[in-house]
Image (cartoon, rainbow over all chains, first blue to last red; front, top):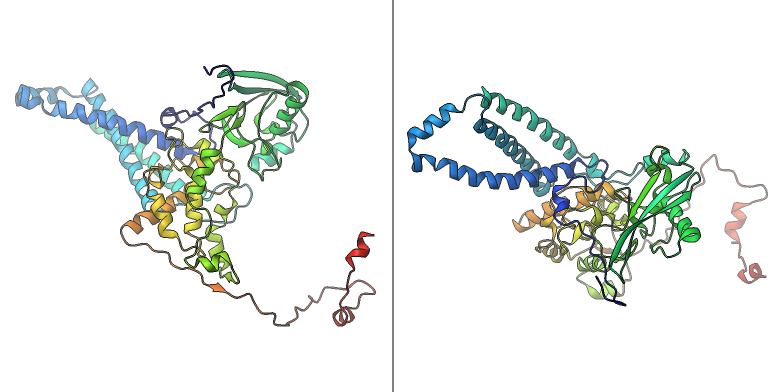
Amino acid sequence: MAGRGERRFLKNMPGWRASFNPWILKLPNNPERLAFVLHRVTGILLILILFLHITVTTTPATRGWEFWVEEIRKAQGITPVTVYFFIFAGIAIFHGLNGIRLLLVEFLGCCVGKPEKPKPPYISATLKAPQRTLLYIVFALWIILWMIAGYIIFT
Amino acid sequence: MAQALKSAAKYPPKTVRVKIKRYSPETGREWWQVYEVETYRGMTVLDALLQVKEKRDHTIVMRYSCRMGVCGSCGMVINGTPRLACQTQVSMVASEENPEITVEPLKNFPVVRDLLTDFTSFFEKHRKVKPYLIRRDTQEQENPKTEYRMTPEELLEIYPYSLCISCGLCVSACPVSASDEGFLGPQALAQLWRYTADVRDEAWRERLEIADDENGALKCHFAASCSAVCPKAVDPGGAIQMLRSALLKYKLGLWKKRKISEPVPPLEPTGEKVPLPPEAQTLPGVDLEAMEREPVVIDASKLLD
């Protein structure tokens, strides 16, 4: 609360919420924003999973190989372990595929819209460029590979 | 824009509820205030706000000027999307089923009062990228006697970026600017690329070093929201990716500006006549040959009388 007579500007920044909520603004024709948010979320989850992975893979050292082999043998069908693997596969596949797309677009300038004379309906060149197709390919491949991973994990 | 053209042809609801996010800098209070506005066909959100200001509540503070999408002053978040209020038809954002329009100040800009935002930092960042042509020969630049050669293809390389009206919608939509005040932002970076790619400019190394700064191009993560909201299709997102690509190659020693244009003297008059097309006909009583022999002199002082 500002004091009487004192004027203060309002800081109007959504902060980190803008990185995790794709609907904080209604942005038409912008699936790249969804990919951006998913990339951030999956990146953070991968870091968390990395710690979990280190903890899990040290089990043979702490509890012996027999225990480890027995636990892996039990992981058949739908169990907490296989569900975890399934979620991990989804996260890793999306982050990897989208990472390749971002490397191509951001560092090689590949598939970005070339400058053109704006004409109606005034859509920015990049939103019509092949990078959009690349993004849809990433989403499609993600779903397909995730389903294949699920089939392998659960059977 | 296509949506705007379609909306212009249809009628908005008879009355709309304009819900404005207000802010008082004296008390620090924020609140929503709702006003009923009678509409007409072709009414823009800016018109609706001005009607509220004229007839209902003159304390509403906002910035606007040209009312035709040229000055870039009336950027606001309308129904959750950063838009220019003067280019947004009421019929685009309100319908008979949902006759409510929410209007908020642009995000990622400090709010001075109500819908008025402070652009000081925005223009400081713009200034930081040196948005002007720089030549090594400062004498030639300060006292130009000639022009720089530039082909239409070379102009097209920078033309869309030069259409930027500095409305700030791109910065408002940017998720990186939302969490990092230091980030140069899509507008400044797009302008940085616009001058770096300009064949008439010689300060590309200097500008690439600015882009390589911790607050520069590498902070962009290509959400492309800037390009999605740009009212002039300037495509800041694409410009930043081209800048990043050039920056990477430059740091690897693989990129340098292909061409710097040289000053050329203005064309000498050749005396060559451009013939009239065969279908062209002069008005009755006009003798072109006589006019060439004795050019018509118009006395400006007589026109004033």
